[in-house]
Image (cartoon, chains in turn cyan, orange):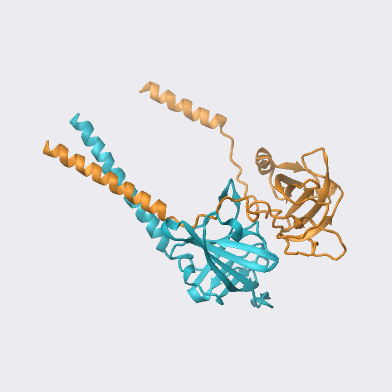
Amino acid sequence: MEGLNRSINGILIASGFVFLILSSILVWQRYAPRPLLSESSATHAIYPTSIRIPSIGVKLPIIPSQFTNNQFQTTNDGVSYLASTPLPGTIGNSVMYGHNWPNLLGDLPKIKTGDLIVVEQGNKITRFTVAFINVVSANETHVQQNTNDIRLTIYTCTGFFDSKRFVVTAIVDPNTVSSLPKKSV
Amino acid sequence: MKNTFWTGVLILTLLFATGNPVHAVTIPSFPVCTSPQGDIKVSYSEGTHGIVGSTETYTGRDAVYTLSQDTLTQCFCSTDGNGIQTNWWNAFSLSEDQVNTLKKEGWFYVPTGSLWGLEEDPYVASNSTYSCLSTTTNTGGPGDGRSDGRSDGRSDGRGGIGGGEILGASTGQVLGLATTGNMPVIAGTFFLALSLLILGIRRSLASWKA
């Protein structure tokens, strides 16, 4: 009986340590430095490749994602681009989202209207100006609805226990779409 | 000892006898028809079309997009709004084993693409369904960035499949926005860890005292 009690105690303490380590990893994941963006050699990328928000120091890769099985795919390595929405720079509402971790979009709530957002797709760059900032509930999906203008909606979690969404709506700059200069070989 | 040996031999024999060699195939990525990409190869605003793997004929709008040298996407939207996406992959460079692996995963093998308006090379093709707007009118839409009723970037009135509205993520059918934070998970894990540790330590102390 004594032996059994000792075993149970040991299992409880060991499990406690395992979960403690797990929670530490989850915290570390939020702060771990992201891999630097590498210069993409693909000049005709199908999907947008990177996003920059100079005012808050964000420069992250874009990972295409889907909405499948009633769930949004998310990434720990950058910003997710909802591939079922229009490409940034084309008419409609391009939707992106990312974790609110300090190493991803944690600083998004510091953004201000008028700030610049740059989206790169291969050698094409599209500039957007932040027009609206809003905090909505997680069920307010209207922010993802399509529009007749050219806009980018990017959001991340905010609020108590990440129950809200901090939504930034940016409208495309006139004469925005341009090509990066070709690299000399 | 003898039994253990023969059990091991039996397990190994079964593993080698039943296990098929794995022929890894890296399937290229195909964009969805609700957000079509690539260069339009052919586009029909209406008509009767065939879908690989099916003997039926389908009436509606059809467009084929060239994604790369080896891949294409066919986006068909029927008159009742049922879309079928066919991903085409040139199988010229694939081995027979790789083709067989793909066939087991539901791909169709097409000996020559010429019957489908493609190169004379063999192809593998895979179908999936999606929702699109009725084909009676071209509505433009999110996939192609047009709002003038054209969807393939042409001015000759021929519409492409890209005009379908996105049904799902952007029309409010989604019940919530993406979950982009993990504070509840971290807090839950931490409190579980704390609870287990406290319980374990308290029990240990109690048993030592006893």
